[in-house]
Amino acid sequence: AIDISSLRSQTGMITLDEGYVNTGSCRSAITYIDGDKGILRYRGIPIEQLAERSSFVETSFLLIFGRLPTREEREHLTDLLTESSPLHESMMKHFDAFPTSSHPMAIMSAMINSLSTHERPKIEPGDDQTLLMYAARLMSKVRTIAAASYKSSIGEPIMYPRHDLKYVDNFLHMMFSQPYRLYEASPEVSHALNMFLVLHADHEQNCSTSTVRMVASGEANLYASCSAGVVALWGPKHGGANVEVVQMLQRMRREGLTPRQFLNEVKDRSNNVKLMGFGHRVYKNFDPRAKILREAAERLLNSLKTQDPLLGLAQELADEALRDDYFVERKLYPNVDFYSGIILRAIGIPLNMYTVMFAMGRMPGWIANWKELHDEPTQRIYRPRQLYVGNPLSEWVPRHQR
Ligand code: ACO
Image (cartoon, rainbow, N blue to C red; front, side, top):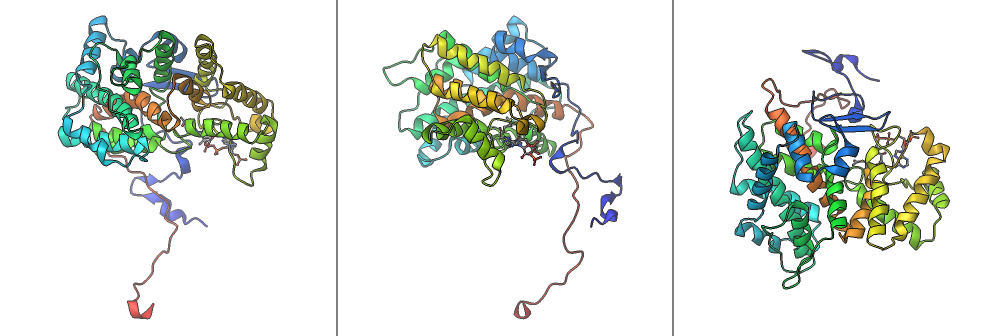
């Protein structure tokens, strides 16, 4: 029984909304989602337009500052990203200290946090120039950290960023070049990775973005707040789902499971098997990002003249689920993670880097949310209440009497 008196506070009644299903935590002008109609817009611009036509750098500016950049502003941000890309030499040494078996998400959050040991970003509310500088440093160094964590995990020398390459191509260079053997990304691969990053760039008050805002509300600095976002993204119900989807498809192939057999296993519920990459708290019709990524995966594989049996299997599995009352009744549709792994596989990104790729893409969204909260003069610290269900009163018992 709920003791109703515990729901009263000095400011009135407390609402209990476990999982924050119906609780708005803030006012935001960054990203608009209509979950019933499958609409997603960044600063009012439909995601379909941005995915096809915008660069990740331009989209980042849009999210953070609320409008598309002029040519000068875009070039300025590109310059800032280029000049901020190297890591301090002492930070490079950290990579040797992590065990080779380290998960790249652990390395990434630790390394972002350690950026604060070199400089503590001090940004006054409304100071957009300083914010831009630190945002560029963060986005750029995260890219270097991501690639370096991969290189160190496979025991290859870390590749330094190049000054002549743009954001996406520079990342691919640091991931796949080797000493004396430079990697050159094809335009199709660059385009696909750019689209992947744009589609992951923001998604309003999800678990990781809410975490960034929570940490920021205590006035923690930009780097510390975004490092918390990386950790929140890690789990399989959130950003980690992109790894789980590929592992699920691989398991189906290995065990020779048809989509129908696998879906029956999910519906049986006794082993708690989920259809990974399906379901969303907000989208109850379709996730527009999944629709774009399904087509993009097909296009990329065709242009690379390669085939991936996992794409066909994913499509069959999704189509079969969408004909099944169990999934239809629960409004379960493919989400952003369902097809993204197929694109990352085609590009050659290893499985344990998938969630790191998501974090790289989400960085501008976290920065935009940090800025929005930081610029709000009446911002209060986030401090939800709880419904206490423990002992009302108990006594401390001396040790010898227990
Ligand atoms: N497979 C099977 N059943 C599911 C799935 C799924 N993927 N997702 C939800 N359900 C079922 C639940 O069991 C529940 O059924 P019930 O009412 O009979 O008990 C019903 O659908 C409602 O699901 P909830 O868990 O209440 O939905 P919630 O909004 O809390 O969770 C979430 C959303 C976490 C995304 C969930 O759908 C899930 O775990 N999906 C798989 C993991 C995944 O793909 N995560 C990525 C999400 S996108 C992102 O974060 C980037």
